[in-house]
Image 1 (cartoon, rainbow, N blue to C red):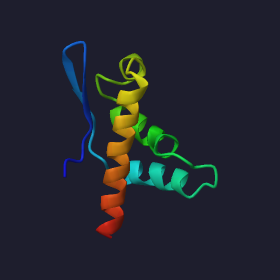
Image 2: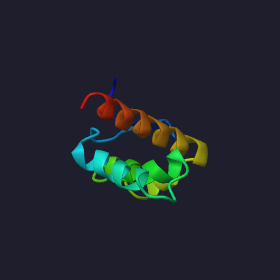
Image 3: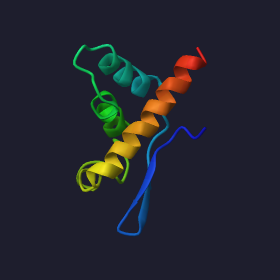
Image 4: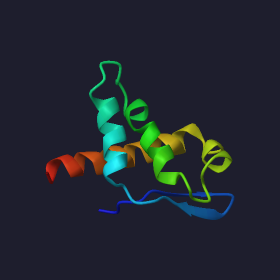
Length: 87
């Protein structure tokens, strides 16, 4: 499984840093909260973290359509679930 995220916006492809322990912890912290009722809420911080320091940080990531951002959240959730299985 790929451990990075990617998306294309305005014909340019953006790729994140790899899913790492920090991204895992960001997801896990939200996952154990009682208010965590959606993959979007649980994984949104980790998506932002994974693109932090890349060309997609800030305005580019904010320009994504909500459905595209939700797709990235789902990919992070799958990475998190795989990490839990492999512990």
